[in-house]
Image 1 (cartoon, helix red, strand yellow):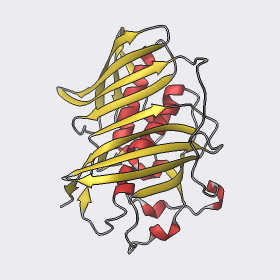
Image 2 (cartoon, rainbow, N blue to C red; image 1 turned 120 degrees about the vertical axis):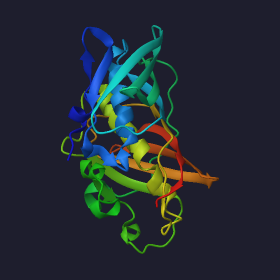
Image 3 (cartoon, helix red, strand yellow; image 1 turned 135 degrees about the horizontal axis):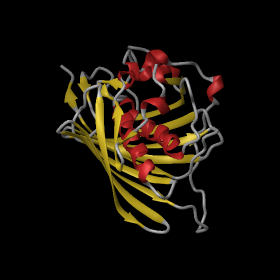
Image 4 (tube, helix red, strand yellow; image 1 turned 90 degrees about the vertical axis):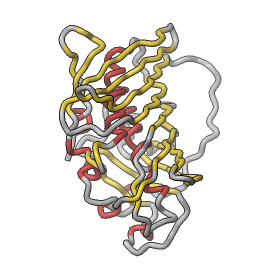
Length: 270
């Protein structure tokens, strides 16, 4: 089992405040290091340089799969204004580029306000069964406590379903984080990681893998006191080796915290 805050920690290199290193933990392995976990490390590096301490969005391209050892990160401020800033993060392992991310931060303001979103009608997490056996044996799944909304999908011989996934999840051993960049990171991990479980629902017998080419997250608000998070993922289209996905993450109080999505590259698993 990993520790999300510890395992995403970045440390400055010498006196150069825009360069960092981090260690990729094997506790976040799923095919390779989980892409959302890597993106969360990049988000934390941006947080160390940002002058505005409120993450607004992240868009990340996954370039190669790192080994479970040290990586280096460089942060560049592309634009720094009074209300928002833009930062670029590059993660490398030696000479190899692992990912590139663009991070936006924004100050809280007094603009328009409305709430047109509505959380799916589901039972509270405490009333639902634990579903550890659902996602497989990879170490990554040991970092989350899942409560399934659809127990009928737990069967190994399940029927095809619509390409949608709905589930309560809680990070363990520590479920919440006071640092806004760490707290946004847990939302980012969920947006990245459950695209494939949604996309594979119509194809229960398919022998494929679908690593994420990218991940995008928009952070609407943070609610660090919400231990449980409800994810709603759907895959509206899969064609010609690409799988499109989109996602929402909700708090226990019914607030839409973040939304986003990924494009997946579908490949035979053999």
